[in-house]
Amino acid sequence: MPTPHRSYDSYVALGDSFTEGMCDDLLPDGHYRGWADRVASALAAEHPDRDFRYANLAVRGKLIGQIHDEQLAPGAAAGAQLVTLAGGFNDVLRPGCDIDRVERLLGDCARELRATGATVVLFTSTDPTRRLAGGARLLPVILRMKAFVQELGTEDGIAVVDLFSAPCFDDRRLWAEDRLHLSPEGHRRVAEGVLEALGRPAAFDWRAPLPAAAPPGRAERLRADARWLRTHLGPWIGRRLTGRSSGDGRPPKRPELLPYR
Image (cartoon, rainbow, N blue to C red; front, top):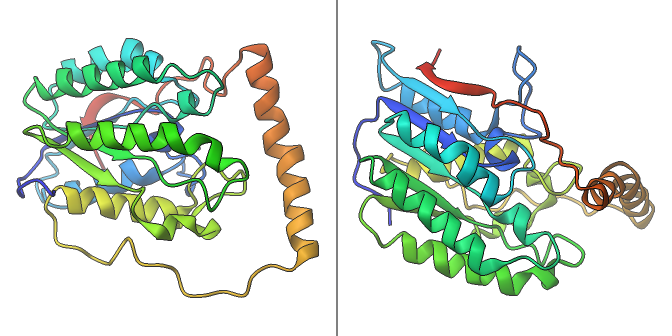
């Protein structure tokens, strides 16, 4: 359910590549824009005096334990009126995921952030089964996480953006070439979903399917699959085997709660 409409003068985003904004449009400083920046822009527009502050502590590749250990304390200490929290999907992608631990840490983060007085926004994962090869393997854990997040959403001051129930995310046009991160259109729709959860009137139906398009031919699909295996899946497997992450050594793009322009 959407939270009642209220004005927010500060916003902190916590999470992994989803919240960092991977594969959205590039900003002049070389960072990706992302749905969280889009939300910040919309909320800042409600403050003509420019008295709106925004921080984004999310870093690509982070597991929920790293989000808990590295982002929770500074996120809570910032004292923002609004916090978004997305995490756990990187854990779910890995074999042998300890789902009990993931839920415990995610719940601890959400409740500690809520204890600061902030409105907290959480997310369910999209449904991978109709988009990703092997997605059915992940479904039982994703459904369990979905139920857990929605239960957290029944607590006062916690809202949930239900991406799982939005079939538009089955469309590959909402995803980047790597098939794991959102395209600019995907980020635009998630941002609208967050604003709707915060009680803002809808600018458009973010759940609506895209206009129909001719499906790619077999040769085009094979070329795209080969390119994906070579450019994205292979390096991802390599990082898993060597214990590396795409976010190793990378700082957050907006580590401090500063005025948003």
